[in-house]
Amino acid sequence: MAVLDVASGYILAYRLFDVAYAIDLGKAEDTWARTVRTGSSRGRLTTTPPKAVAFGVPPLAIGLGVISLPLTEGSVQATVTARLYDFGVVSIALRVPVTDLAWTAFSQRFNAIDRAVGQEPATALWTELLDRVKQGVGEALERPMPSTLEEDYLVGVVTSFNEPMTAEALVARLDLVPLLSGEQRPLSEGARRDLLRHRYSYYTDDLVVLTWDRAFIYEPRGDTDTIDVLEVANAQLLEMRYYDELLDAELPRMYDLVEAARRRMALPGARRFADLARRLYTMVAEVTELTEKVDNALQVTEDVYLARIYTAALELFRVPTVSAAVDRKLSIIRDTYTALYDEASSARSGLLEVIIVLLIAVELVLALVR
Image (cartoon, rainbow, N blue to C red; front, side, top):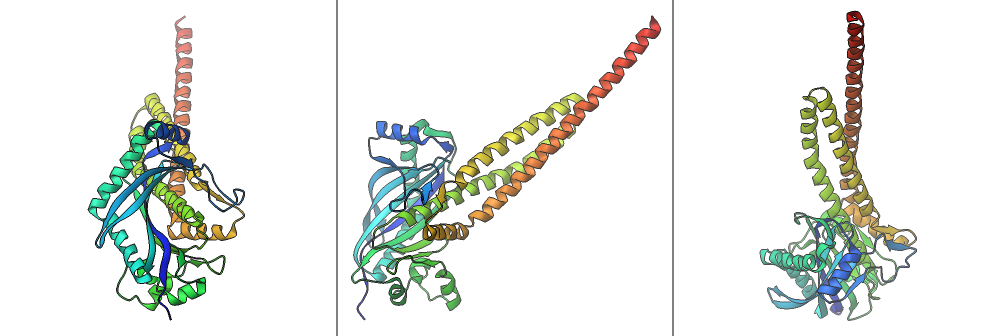
């Protein structure tokens, strides 16, 4: 059997950052065009009809040029693009083209790029690229914050082999495990089954295999919709992680503030209850608004195949689990808000009753004096 070579394809490494409460994409597009003067566009899926799958708010894609990425066997050229989402996430992608490479060499380069973008010098590279994006969009970042949370993902894409291939023949002839796992030692049969479990095909000659942090895509038509869907799922995971950590930090602080407010007396205490309740209500409203934006970042209706991939990616990335944790913590804060509001109302009512009794007593005393 002839050796199977990758005739054309590319390796895509991207990293996502949470940079702001929100991004004004219209202002970002105008500012980028005015200050940087390079191309930008509003994202849409390339082949899927808009009525079937569409972005809630189309992200803004901008070009950052070409860089040299050092690997063990020598440097490779990578095209850099960034995509900005209105809920505050920036995704930066490095695309390394591949032509006429044996499958084993393709897998080795895939793993070499993974090591290169994850090492310490690459951290400085990602930071530099992110700073360029921030400076280019300026005040479009609403309530910017330090980028403490990140997500990364690696995708190997083949558009053609040195001979026509079907998905079934491809799985039979190629060992995808070293590429998808990054391991050089043989894996157990159970581990191999788990690694290849999320495998999807629509036509006989296309294939998508998903894992937690890597994916392999064989797409002879060059469609990029699957890659866009995977990026959106990673962006949703990143944003949900941010709100999960935000609420984790807020709950103990909320308990301390409630306890401090309960130690106050009468009217000042009631006012503090009301102020704290308003603060909690504002937080719940803001987090709910942003999580709804995240949930609606991509709307899948009629494209059943892409919907399967999107749903599988969300499950793999544990987005529903993190989202459920955020909902539980929001529910706790809502219940606390309701209790504080009721307690503040009760405190005011009690104070009014005391005042009324005192006024009646004053009236009685004045009447007796007269």
